[in-house]
Image 1 (tube, rainbow, N blue to C red):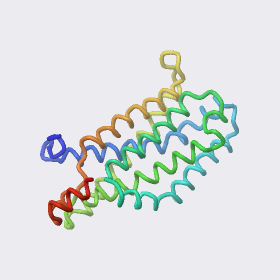
Image 2: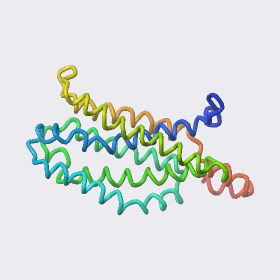
Image 3: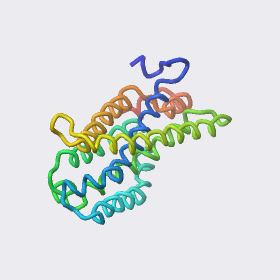
Image 4: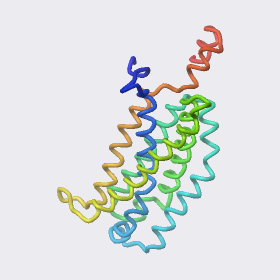
Amino acid sequence: MEMKTGTIFGISISLIINNLATIMQRADEKLIPSTAKELREAFHANLSDIGFLSFIRNIFQGVASPLAGLLAISYYRHAVFAFGSFCWVISTVGTGVSRYFIQTFNCYLGAAVNGVEHAIVYPVLQSIIADSFKDSSRGFGFGLWNLIGTVGGIGGTVMPTIMAGHVISGISGWRCAYLLSATLSTMIGLFVFFFVTDPREKKTCSSINPYHQRYLKS
């Protein structure tokens, strides 16, 4: 796992992967609004139904946000993010391969799960970014992180919109957009789990004795 502590052009690989994860997280949030028209036509649903899905996801995302803090205290943060990303991948794939509205979200349950998982990963990413920079440069770090997240949100809006107007290998473009997002999110989730170092681990290891380190890892 030497790659965990490596750098590319002087930039930490962990920080690069965290920012890629931010891009995918923001992009996935934009999938439903960007393909609302296609979802309505494919599932014969009302536009209000599609809007209600976004409403449910946002409500659960807000309510479940404190859960991220509890998980981050109990587990390594990169593992928490990987778990959350895989859960939102399941929800995204379910939408992309389903043929009926009720099947897709199982009475809005899928949208709620998607919101909960985004609520878990977003604060975790914020805390990792905060610990990755010194106090004097933390403002710059958050500004850069927000800029990169905005790029992800733009990409998550533009790409599905463009793909939705095409048929790719006999598959509707909007479905391909969902499957592409799920595939990339899975890859990023694996990268985060295997190659990202939690900055908190270094601080913890430098402040406790070896016996306690073994106890924490057990």
